[in-house]
Length: 260
Image (cartoon, rainbow, N blue to C red; front, top):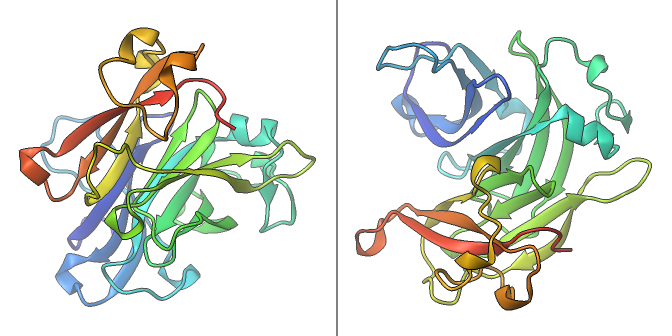
């Protein structure tokens, strides 16, 4: 809860107001028991100590998993994108309407459960209540990170050495009501070993770097042919939990524009 315990923080995301949301798989003070939580932090102050302002404990709503196989990934997706693509609300069994959930902010949170490779979409209310709006498989047996690419609308679900470093690309299909669907699966760059990559990030809107000038500096990710890309390339980053060869971060390239 707020101000107590020692969360085993695995991933984080920002909402449009600048608050930080952290996915945690357990309270390390009680490390033998799962506690699948999303914690909200206000990082706007000057204090060097962060205390969660709100906790959403999802444990009872998710499958039972080992304390080390819990909420490994989280990302925030704005309502504007979801409504423009007719995202389906499985809770109310209709197209998602943000007005059905007062006091939830301006987007939904998607979390990845390491133990089964599934992605769950939640609306989080300011009271600490929540509703699950979607559940979808990433196509892999485990999941380590989630990244929503605002420039393309793709949701990336990445795995570590348990899945040979593959990443799944999910998208909302154009229809009257849609859910995220796996559209493609990509291998890690051939020059990167099968590492314990527990984080994946794509260069943000301010630094998309969609330029052909990048293509000779890094290896393209996903077996793309950078020389044939008219949209250019942008940087992607993997975080290695084992810091192999003294390196925690590795960079590659991703083709800009539509991939599927």
